[in-house]
Length: 408
Image 1: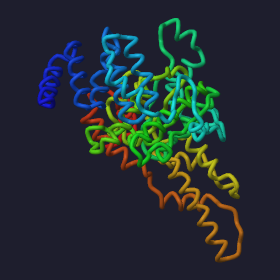
Image 2: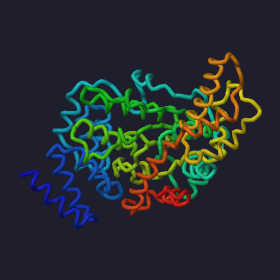
Image 3: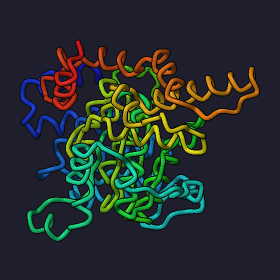
């Protein structure tokens, strides 16, 4: 009977999404039915208003179901402070009657978090990335300036923090850009590895996720980089596993900063398939800024070629600028492959003749004939999403690139 009631209430809510008392009733029924992920999602619009305590209460139930007991206690306490009528003796007994494995207590971070070491090796900045000036400026506006000039943003009532989702073809430098962004800020850089977070034990993945965010908060300013974010934040409607949906929901809770504030914690996500990312992740306060990372432009391609040619003997006929001009739409991986093929051609001749010659322009021209831009398949497929799934303008920058590049 409960599921039938919930279905009827959800139908009514679709007709009248601004009806706050109705939304509160929907959340209450979802909590009774132990459909905690849905309760968190449906309560999100209540963050502003008299019923924002329901947001914390829903998150408390979700955290408890995932085994994150300390997080659940903190959320429940916040909920009751906001609205004393939300006090739930049954929930309190569950929160106080279990023995917790401490994950986060206030602002303290336990020893388990030491496994999330900041990854500041090879600190780089935008000066180390050739070209891509327009993209760099967008990142400055979205991330760098708010942290570098907080007083200006505070004067305009703008909050500092949030998330930026980078998307584009594989091998086009999304991770490199994220690392350079952290370098520009002088911030600690954390890479979220799915291998470190995902666990076969119920509730353990959510705890690991909470650990990472707590570590970043305690070492702010920090940048958390999540590669292949579609694997962690895929559409919950496509997920059959309750535990997988719970991880996504916990991720949403952490991004919202419900337990601790995410001040000076920037979250960068990267994906090759933005159309597979749960729409809830693109709400304000989460990945509310989305940027297309195109294949490297000509200056960037020349720099990438130079990096891969280091330590190799090139003769005077090789002009990297000329090679860069002939590799439009090539990814960084494609350019590395061109250098390898040119090297193999010279190496093969040396093995046959014993003549240890330098790599020349002919070697590169031959390599170019054997190589095609691997990004073209992605760009053509992306064209379909631009044509049929861009009603909200999410892919406008991609659309402009495709139009300029005449991708059909």
